[in-house]
Image 1 (cartoon, protein in one colour):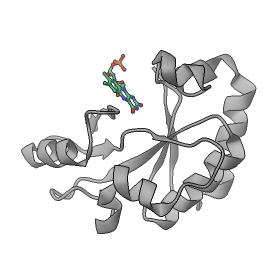
Image 2 (cartoon, rainbow, N blue to C red):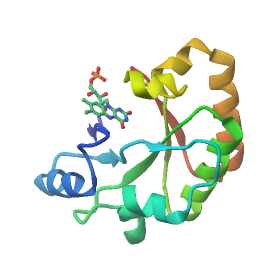
Image 3 (cartoon, rainbow, N blue to C red):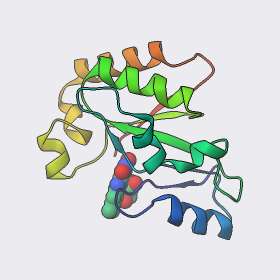
Length: 141
Ligand SMILES: Cc1cc2nc3c(=O)[nH]c(=O)nc-3n(C[C@H](O)[C@H](O)[C@H](O)COP(=O)(O)O)c2cc1C
């Protein structure tokens, strides 16, 4: 069994990831969701939400960190996933679970479960864009 630190936007940032992974007992953690709209994000956006990428995508305690993306445009998600991998992400996680109204209103998170064909297109394009050795996962609730 593995124990993951749940991603929490606005709460589990790099500082809390650092503190909690120092305590121990966590096998891997995830960034807060990185929102992808209609463009390739600049590397600084990844650096802001995932500064651990600068040190091998691990917290100071050595716990691996995955990068979570949120959005609904398959190609744009794929381009940003590829960039995240270039920047050092060891796993790409797709947010298909966020129930927040503000997020769902802009067609992100759990609301995507109502559009299985879109989900499929997102996974297909992201999988295609990401190097084969890097796992692509999705979080649903
Ligand atoms: C404040 C807050 C922010 C959250 N942000 C994210 C997020 O960015 N990505 C994500 O996948 N889940 C997010 N979640 C969901 C949690 O990771 C986790 O799944 C949830 O709190 C546990 O409840 P569950 O058993 O219903 O999943 C968030 C939850 C809370 C309370």
